[in-house]
Length: 389
Image 1 (cartoon, rainbow, N blue to C red):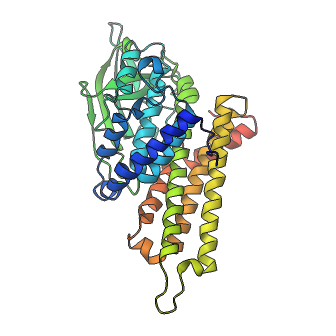
Image 2: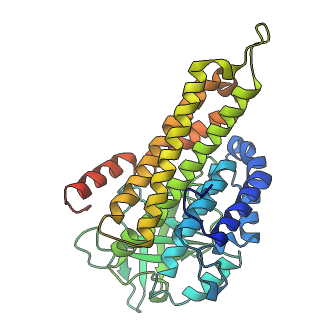
Image 3: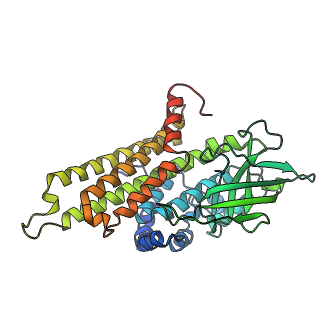
């Protein structure tokens, strides 16, 4: 059967490898990662070892040279094993694509080689305490240092891999900006003076993604560290970061759905009533819930598959489909995991099955910028011809 995301032979082989990695490494640690709210080090190391850190890095720089289709397939497989590991990976690839798009970052190619070799983990640091989930509007500012560089201070919230990432693609208003939309992206490197993790993550779901706040205190930014020209941040955010992040998180949500369908089907097939000899799968109400879960999952996967085609051959409707694919997947994950909890009852609520964890992981998408409210507003604007911002 053709893959929902339209994979060629090379991408299909990578998805198969990712599925094996998810089963043998990520899934085995997923419950522990969740319970202890710890970073999924084993899965991330395995991804690096197998070359997945450079999945979408050009082959000329040591990467696998793959595009969004392979990315979505790999993320979906990974999310079936451990959604926290998938979240870390989505942020890494999205930030790496921002780096790859840069015409100003002086050591761009060296960074991409290190990423492809599995020696460098990167992430995004866009959302700020002052502008909350409106990640496109930083309140921090770049101030000229008088020597061709800049100084900046700010408080970044929800930075995935905050403790473990080797670099952060961050944002700030350009000097003299008239509004927060006149932003600039820059690269902050681990250990830089003035950069520190300012808390820890103890969330409801995706508990292992190390999404901690980061404080930036009078940190020096060289001109060579700029990922965009001053004021060029919105273009890269809208044309690079947002599409890759939306596709990745949609695939992650679809992976959560697939894991919930598989766990529910297995439970209904293997469990029953000893006193009557009837199996859970013999109950029409439970079969109906499972059917709804499967249909909703495949609807979301089909929309993402179509959207990946739009991204490969862009048109004026491509941004709309990207937004819709993320929105549909987030809603599907919430609905599917809710049905799974109801179908499996006490076995799910008592954590005998992984469904309670999947239920919580699925809900992270609702508050992750762009939130569901943002997405619905953006889609409505796109449909009525209004600008997003």
